[in-house]
Image 1 (cartoon, rainbow, N blue to C red):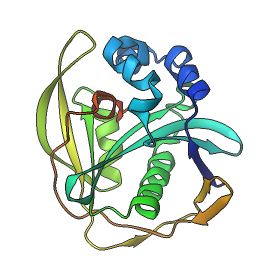
Image 2 (image 1 turned 180 degrees about the vertical axis):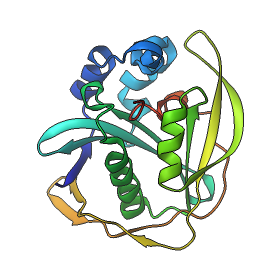
Image 3 (image 1 turned 60 degrees about the horizontal axis):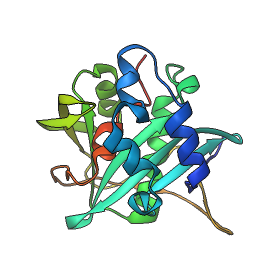
Length: 203
């Protein structure tokens, strides 16, 4: 079944910010957990063109943000709707986001950062070829937390395993390949991007 990406609207951003809530320690990923993150997420100018809603079978299942950094690097953030987490959908969701990044941004590298406590998310990223490159401390949610910076460790290309439908206004294209090759530390300009990776998979 195809994944469809469309630009996030303000209404969708507000729905995610105020109605998506995660259980237990994963409340860490609630948008309302940090005021600064919430303000950034709700501001259309701060989101810019970086945020995309993802649908599958006509259902909204999550979102990605793709921040273009120096050296042709994409910094990836993602979130899956709480009702779909823990159901084995994280791997396909993540692969769809990676395919979308390559098709639309043609990056030389893709990085992400994930909270160090989220071991299950880290394992998910490792399944797609990401490797840890460093740890760092980030102030968020009223405290200081350890994060792991990860880099896609593919050299050359590999074929995607399913059709990816990209909806950009009236134009639709099909993604074919993705590669991740080099190293870049995560920029601190987007707190949400640093914090988001890991939402999609925790059980």
